[in-house]
Length: 310
Length: 310
Image (tube, rainbow over all chains, first blue to last red; front, side, top):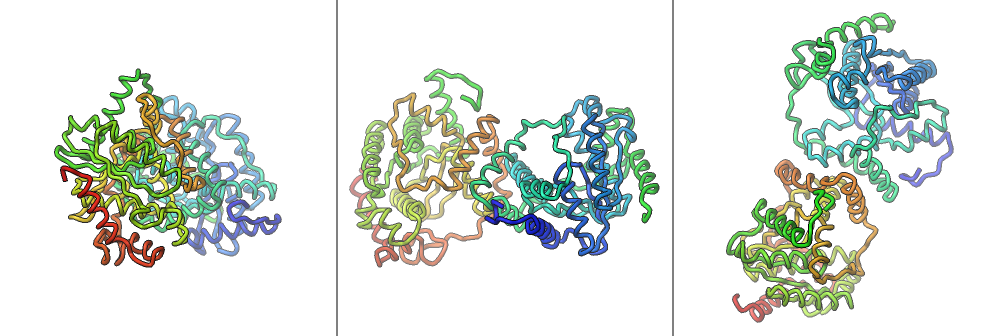
């Protein structure tokens, strides 16, 4: 491993990575004994490896792991992804809830983007955040875990710094506290794990994941360029990014507080920065009707049907 | 010009650059009518071009321009540099004061670095800041102007961000206010000018400068890597850096305030973060005696001899 100047065998590499995730969880108090953790499983290497590692840590820490995958209705790409997440759910023996966007809205992300005239990634972000949070609330989960890795996080922080959205920076912490019964806590157990190590972990342990990128993703963004150059810098100065993120977390309270207070959407009751949440706005524009309340009802139903210990 | 998607002839390019410097001066209130401005002339392209442009703006704004060069005693490199700064002083008709480190301390930067066992660039930084400030104080200058360009500044800001020295970041503003009669104000009129444009300006106007880098400089630092990668990013996303720096200045008051209060060195009376300033400490270590008081006396004498309108 370049960053630590270590050469490890498979067994010790596994231990190293799993220990790192364990230490991240403890250091930032991400998961506590008895927690119900809902993991957002995209099917990509990060979330799949995280599912795998969390399933191993389940016993030691003593928490319940639920998986969810959002089928965003992006043709073959989504079909293949659904197959892979089903397999991982069986392999690690954790319940999986698949939310199918086409069942909820009758259309998928491509059509939603076209009808609202917004970039697919922006629409997709709103939809994913909404459904994930609504499901966590319904499950009474203590947190939503996502597969964001060290490289992702440093890239996001630098991007917000470059556009000088200083108020957005504290939102990139390893744990973001939720509120009452409508906003789930978000945690990032791979916060201190290099992307390269995650790839290697998947390889060494024969973990299947979706290698293709989403066909709708725009690869020419400043974010992807930033990530590439950060990778080159990290290679030249091993430990640069992990050193940065640790100093960053220590400094979190020095950044200006976010100005937008979170309130409840007047239509669906879910978190919103304005009077109406983005999900209700977008669906109103695309389908003539805000779909928040229906999506929540749909999720409530699916949870009742599929989770036996609910 | 890549960043503005403009193709200009020599005359219009000159106007564009000079206007940009003028706008920077006005926007950040860097120079006022009647000011005495001391320009630190390293001999490199940035400070030489800045001398040239400031000499053109002298009449319009109505300020007095003084040049100073610190002969740091780095062999052939320093000799060549002294020649070039003499020429520019004649060409633009501005008085030049050369401070010769070997005359003041009897040794140059290389020996000072060896005797104190510190990296040359670190020792050199202390010496330059000290002598420049002492000279400005003696001249009763309203400010010290330096040739730091847009690319330099963005690199410095990002470096401090990467090491999370958030308290250092406000010190990278275009104007840093001095204090009373011992700390000069510092200004950076090339704050919004691309390095590439400065090079082009020198070429188009046949302005001679020292092209060699200092032979003691360490090129493998994270700073130089950062600058290189920023250059690549700027090329891919034209306007990235200028957009950043403008948003940055607007956000300046959101950064944590520097903790170190500036006091006076108990030995020489110049600015210091501790009881004794770095210049007195370094010279004490290298020569057995703190040389601050002597350096100040030396500078006082040289100013009396060389500046007729003093």
